[in-house]
Amino acid sequence: MNRTGLGLFLFAGALGTGLMLWWLREPPPPPAEGARADYRLENYEMTALREDGSEGFTVTGPLLERDTEAEVTTLTEPRFSFPSKTPGERWNARSGRAWVGPKNEEVHLLGGVEMLGPANGGQPLRFSTEELTVYPEAEKARTAAAVTVTQGRSILRATGLEVDMQAQRYELLADVDAIFHPDPARNRRAGAAARP
Image (cartoon, rainbow, N blue to C red; front, side):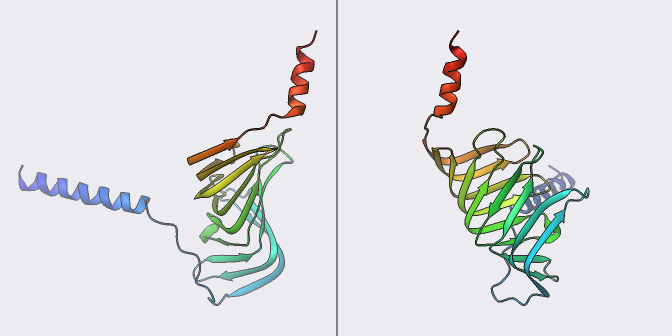
């Protein structure tokens, strides 16, 4: 291999490694405890918009603090509401605290996280975990932490979760344990439909 070929090969390897490291980077750390906020809002309600001007999320809570230099908003006991593809239905989430990254692209819910999905005429899904990241623009959510999913009396436990909020689907990533209970109302409806 000549020097030019070797140089191109090494350059391509370095570029590929750099891109891989950028892709696998950790999300930015939460703001430092005790960091001075540029402004504070108490008992607020805020709606954040997406790039196209549609609603990304609405959040209410007792305290919002904004660090304009870091472009990070920290929230105490927030209650989030994310749009759903089903008119009149929403994804609702709450946590002990949260922080919102630059341009509202990432919402990090921390401590006692509960997320309730749209009912769609049935029983809504509830996700319980200690941390959850929501990407409002992509309409996705994920966690690597332990998670419990309940729907009616059925309970699933796992490590890691990915949610497609637009398609209203979720995937449990590892260590899945499930307890399924039949829906008595659904069984009665099915039995009545089967009778002549």
